[in-house]
Length: 341
Image 1 (spheres, rainbow, N blue to C red):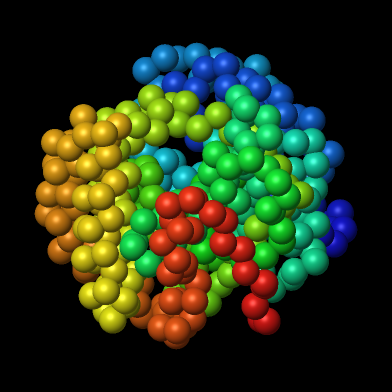
Image 2 (spheres, rainbow, N blue to C red; image 1 turned 180 degrees about the vertical axis):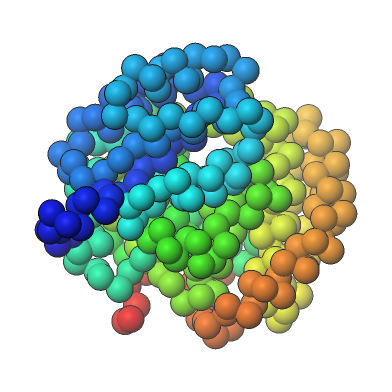
């Protein structure tokens, strides 16, 4: 990233890092300690306490004098707090970091360097490792399958050097950087999602607008994952994840692809939740599907605005997805060469 003049710096930092906390506890302290140790210093840190029942999150954030702390009176969800953060941010780049994500000391430096190397790219995502199990990937950007099921590329796979710089379908909200004005122009996060799938929804809108997301494999964080919501198999996570996957499809997918992907999505959902380990969630899944279709009219009203911003062709969108079922079943990363801009 080019050096900025003294006048530029007076207007605000280059990056605004937003950490949205909800019952984060000790992970928040570890996250903020890692941010303090960053080699890149031209950034501000904003912590939004999303009405945590345990007041410890605010107390932990207050231990760090450089942190701007916001205490919400109600839980706005990741989406509402993410949009709140971007309105408060002063940097050109808006960086989201989960409170259970621990960045390497050069994480921000690597993201800033990638932005300098690729001045026409305005969305970046990080290499995520499993915090509890060194050597296991937590994700290499988000992938969208033709079945309408997104996943984190490489999730829980051994790190064998699969990561390379290139395009992915969408950034992972746990550790991403986006041009602040672009985020605002796209309407930010959809607050109807509350949490889960909101980053894929944003990434889909980036794809529709012709804006690539670049995976920066040298920008590394170590992620605990779902620390605030009881784990990825909690009722909260299963309900919101299932419902919101339908909403991502309804809202963003152009008609020819939507006609193909919706029945494939339903088929894949049945196959996934017929597995023995998923059977206890059958009733919850049925409730989430009913909620998804009950909310479909609102999503279809939103899609009118989304499709007006579309710049990508149907072929370009299809090429940004994976059509290989083995990619989905194996959660294989899909990283493509950066397009010419």
